[in-house]
Amino acid sequence: MILDLTALADEHLAAARTAPHGRSAHLVMHDGVLRQTVIALTSGTSLDEHNAPPAASLQVLRGRVKLTAAGWAEELPAQTLRMIPRERHGLTAVEDAVVLLTAVND
Image 1 (cartoon, rainbow, N blue to C red):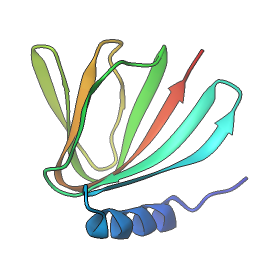
Image 2 (cartoon, helix red, strand yellow):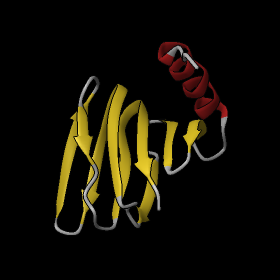
Image 3 (cartoon, rainbow, N blue to C red):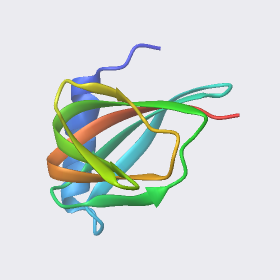
Image 4 (cartoon, rainbow, N blue to C red):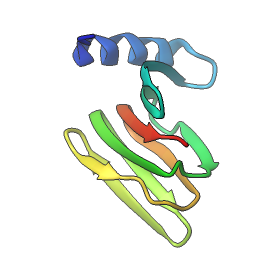
């Protein structure tokens, strides 16, 4: 399967801008324990703190987000990739943003 990440980012950011909660997400790949999800968030929208999967990364396709966990926060601009901490964490869009979440679930 080949996906156009630019088109997916456009589609889900447009959907997030009209969604009541300011976000849109879609599972784009699922193969056994591997999952990849495109998540679009409008500026100021957050994903509340949640538990981390056994392994995950976050690639910022567009915009800027803030990844938070107990006692720290880190802003990630477009075109960056970061491992997600293995502790409870949250995500907030500093500006309209689209991310690709890659997670391995057991």
